Length: 214
Figure 1 (cartoon, rainbow, N blue to C red):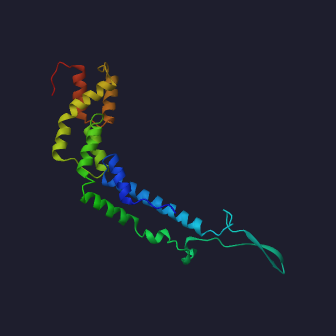
Figure 2: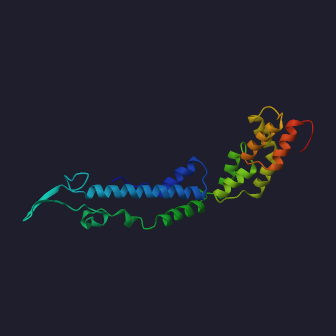
């Protein structure tokens, strides 16, 4: 039987790839643990199946009585019917509470600074800042149940106007020449999570770059 991979080993591998939030790492570890349990259960069932049994169940035997021949199926094994003498411990006995095991691993990771909400938040901010506005970034962080530190939040606010201008120019090199085009560019920036005030200032500057609206 394949030896299950430990939750701690899987967690450290994921954290080596990139910073993770507690919420997403917990979800991934639970999925990993459940897959390991399912694989172990499958191995136990395969080892408990009698030699020569068909995949669909035990071979059928004939029972003869006064009414003539009758097909009688042998009962199939279930996890509860596994013989205690088989030496294979049912996976359920080894995994009483997967969530408690995962939470214990997460607590260890946090205590040893392998898992950090602050590092994750700032990492995600830097990864998103070049393409998205503050509303989008804050919403994404809220889904991970983390918040930026005050200095990081201030830096994000101070840079939003310049970031919005850069995002608009990459998508629309020319200034909007009509109300329809202005509305289209505004919708694009709003979809990227920039605030209404920032969008207004960006489009005004695009049309009249000589004006200083900073």
